[in-house]
Length: 66
Ligand SMILES: [Zn+2]
Image 1 (cartoon, helix red, strand yellow):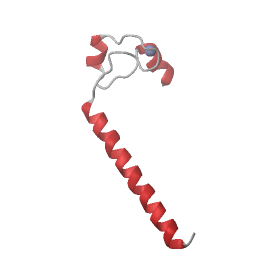
Image 2 (image 1 turned 90 degrees about the vertical axis):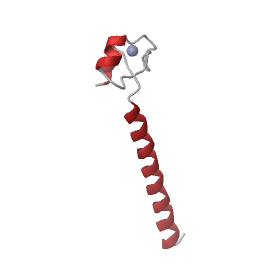
Image 3 (image 1 turned 180 degrees about the horizontal axis):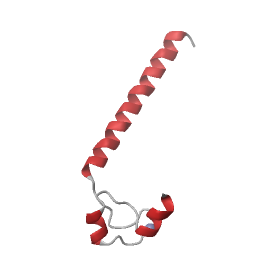
């Protein structure tokens, strides 16, 4: 593999990272709250969904993940 090949691969990876970050940014901008915890599958109270936009975990799981 010569220098140019490595340069092209590095550039492609950088672009892929950029696209991934943009997609993540789009997901975050929607701020959709989950109705069920992604960790334990338990219900997330409506009040918590409103209080924490984009919330994905119930209170106990959130505390464990922090
Ligand atoms: Zn949970």
